[in-house]
Image (tube, rainbow, N blue to C red; front, side, top):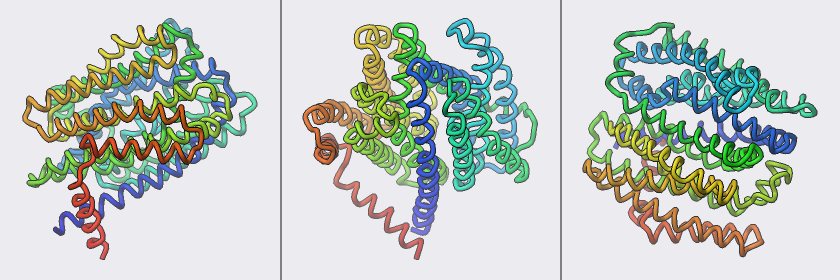
Length: 485
């Protein structure tokens, strides 16, 4: 019982810190997005989205982002994990510099993007926390020690500086200027993180052969997983640009920005859970796997319910975020929420597979997203335009989730197989019903009640929410209250 109390208190404190930090960050961030989306023409926003997606995807693939969960696990459980972390940081820094140069040349030929624009975009990706590249690596030791407050504070500093600069230069914004502002605004926080990890003795500039062997030899599936995740993202935006046009890419980017609250909640839910679940597995806790299955379902339900609330308020969100510039693309924004709901399941699968060391499942699931892009994107974009890319994303995720369920079943993980089936069926049924409610209901409150009601009833009917989940949640809350007392 004391261990459960401690875990509950630790999780509540950590998730609370992540929540407050994310709310503060995105409150300012959304103001910045409003400046960008209401100022840049759709084609110019398409260029911005295109370059950001390319730099983020290629750098994440090259810099072995698939190892982040492993690094947290090692930092939390091993005294000599500093060698591994330092090797990862040094390796990523070297790779980042080299890949940025190659990427600048590639995009000048593939997408007619100026060299300087790509180089500035690469720098912004490396130093921004949302870039999921070098900056996020320096945050990992803080995550491993459940210290989310400092990274959150530095991220808020970043976005305040960035939005201030966007406001200052609002009359002359273009894609290149936005990227330069992002890079400049994120540098102070990035330098502070480097200094703090150096001071704590967590990071030293070194390349350990043993650590390289761990990265490149023993857990190759992790790197493969990252390749497929970001290749999927890269294929979507590239095929949309090739089959469609850059204005369609701009609409795609705007819709992705509007779905940020679901991504925020995903980080709030999963970031503190990864180290806690890892610790329970290491301690061979007898209920660890049952808890993981329950957490998987409930985390997915929480994220998707947030999407339902957003769907109800979507016309208001579009007006607030874009100042009405994308008011005629409400359907694309709703389809993005549906696609992201399926993405929440795949996100959970990747973490679950990594925690139980079934890296093969995480990699193959991600590979099937790429297969789905190749099979569905070109056909549906040509048929449905920008809406087609979101329908293709839904079908790609359904394919990946189905195969993940089959692989987990073969490996004897029946609990997670059932959870995947229930969650997938629930989202598949709920999406079209919410679309119908959006078409036939004009009042925001009526839409909200209908959409949340539909989602909850469908969740109960499909088993995505079970009656005994109440006992699990009550036990967790009771443990936290007792720990506080």
